[in-house]
Amino acid sequence: MASSRKSWAGRALSLSTLGLLLVGCTSAPGAAPGPPEEEAPDFSIEDVDFAAVEWSLSHHGRMIPTDGLSFASGPAIIETVEYTIGVDAIVYGDADGDGDLDAIVPVSALDVVGGGVELGTAWYLWADQDGVAVQVRVPAALGNCDIVVESVTAVDGGFEIHEFHLRSGEESYTECGDPGSDKRTRTVTISADGPDGELWPVQTAPFAAFGGACPISVAFHGDPATADHFPAPNAESAALAGDRINTWPVEEWQIFRDGYSGWQLVGVNVDGHSGCAWTRL
Image 1 (tube, rainbow, N blue to C red):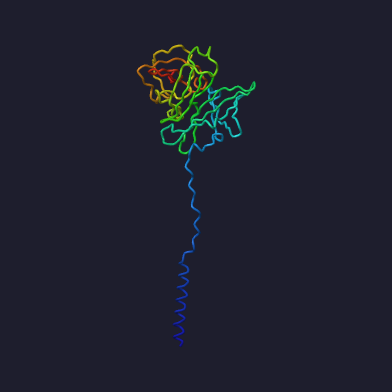
Image 2: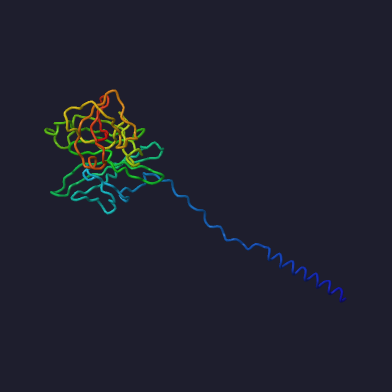
């Protein structure tokens, strides 16, 4: 009997030890899986609240842009001028060829001195760059006493701008805001070929040229070009090409006169179509 008790005791000990070992080898229950991560919605520039983002605005459309402005609390203000976004007039289209929508946004100016004087509207390009709205600082178009912007529409390859410019001398007998006789229809895109990689408005039709607002001429005729002209103040961009290129001086706007050292903006006519381009001083 003693031998039998030892045998059962040994078996009991072995079973007990085995049980402890099995318990020790069993994994503790893992933490319950959390909820699946929600994917961020695809970015669309159509969803951007342009009143809530930071802006660079060119005072009167002619001055070097003032950075860090916002419309979050109402009109943006520079000196005595209030600037307002034309939210209902924003146009969307692919202007840089990457397949994503970009935008061109109108900003109207009102001088509040003397009861309020409408000063015109500047149109600014915004690009979708990797899911972020990035502004092109130089206005793509400017409507004022001398230039009437009739319409801005999205087309294949960019935005089409229909506008009328005063020719030299027409300002003497044309009411402010009435269209001049120089009708232009141009397609504007967003390019990375601006100075120092700055996003830049480039015209692609009816000929390659500067795609920003073009000042009116201060000459009655042009002269044959004697130097290369470029869409941007960047000599690495492609020079304008055509069978016949004439150039002439335009009104001096501070944004162009002082903003890009060593360069000058001039009026150009390429094979019968007028616009603006840059040449080195």
